[in-house]
Image 1: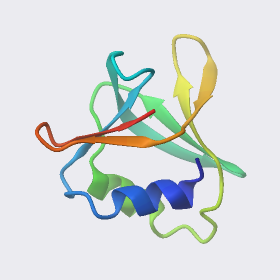
Image 2: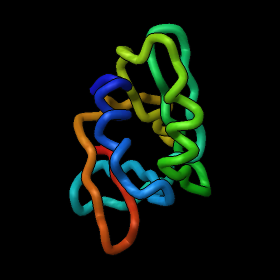
Image 3: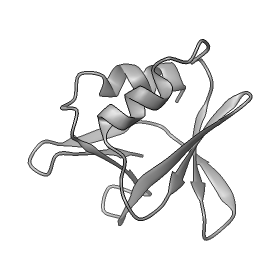
Image 4: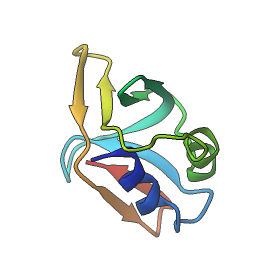
Length: 98
């Protein structure tokens, strides 16, 4: 998934929705707590406190070039995983990248 696609998908969500990464549909949730743009890629880092949609849009919404791939950096394996989509849980107020 590219950053411009991700921003489009989350732009209509409630601003307080928290953002998580999930390795599979039944896997554990990992809070996305840091975002870093490095040249030709956007890296999402797992941490302790999840960023909200508002925080993500403030950090990334003003970039000039947003057609760059998005990856989640998996701290425990020192690898990065591609993002393929977003799942929304309205009851919990959370969005998950898959």
